[in-house]
Length: 421
Length: 160
Image (cartoon, rainbow over all chains, first blue to last red; front, side, top):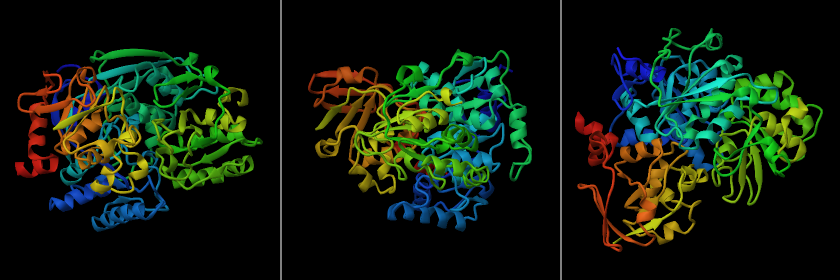
């Protein structure tokens, strides 16, 4: 049998093949489907229009409203109503309505729906996040979603894999967000188009699952089909006692002599805090190159950096200080929200003059809860800085880590977090 | 008469094609009103049924929102020609029965306002203004079958 990467092995298994190579097509069995309030309601309507009433497996679907939740206006309330009616009618096992709802890519792993070795799809481009667990995971549109909900199968072309070796160890004040912004700066927003991005190397051993998810989350920002990180003890510990439903899983790893499209090495010990300038995630600069640029808003949240670890880092910097600009903190799930409250982080945010919101994708995609006016600049822990992404087409988004966003909030301008740590 | 609207840009993303502020609906007619709004606010007004968008690399990068394809279809755009397409957008086009035309160097071979005629069968574009025939990369057979059926769900239905 020919040698394979982890991505190839997972897709071969799901497609019922002994072996696959890049370019092959497989009809892969889907193990989990993520559904949210923007792309799922149209999928439900399509199924109805085509007279397809079937859900392939109600235990393999997780549903949460997140983009516009709580509903921001009448139209989004209608989307939520369609999602809610369907989820209840089909008796979807893992439905997270408001109160339990959270930003999907933080919620599903936290709630134990992501297993290594599985094939996971979702109607959202950042579904690639789940690859941090050694799973194949990718985003799709509403039609694919409809087909998958009905049949549990989707076709995939096997992607070639690019290997990113993360060497060394991050210095204090530098985080996994800085790593992925550096990777995207190097290869560009289509540097991994149609391909798998596999992350390996010693630096990962010092990164939590939360930190790893920040890396795989942004694989799509380099055009990648999926991002993937192999299973280890850190993965195992995170999953222990957390998985819902099936608790067993299969671990795959890349063969030592598997073939890669390319191999890049990143010395993490030399990395500095990074800021991606408008209007592409690949416009990365080191903080040394850009500190001092005045901002109007700081946004700490999203599926990239709205997890407890991120809020702790931000609080560490904001403690005993006051923000100089509007600062919005968005815990990504209710569990994270409660944890942040219990740990006293809300007291820190309150005293610093931040506003804390309910879990939502909110302003990350320009939905609500922190929209930018014409000409405004926002330093944000999110994943995209496209034109108009967080509001007015003439507003600007600067992507950074929670530490950089917090330090910048204190100074009212792009700031190096290392002086506060 | 299909006219080309050429944007010499790479990475035209889904936020530019249909900004997220309009994603609170999936009504095609509504989405069509805002097609390409953050790239060119005047696009919908000047686009006539059948007109063609021409762009550089990585067209449709970003979000998985199929709303981007629906807004383009709703605005009655006849085709999108790009040097290359982002993966999810490309797949969404096929699933919606909309043929994504991949043609290297398109923005240098087609000028804004050129009159074009697409021959899907032979994989060629007749640039009537410049009196030149251009070749494009044909879709693989399995994807072509989905486009011919009018989209993935129709294709699945036809197979049963």
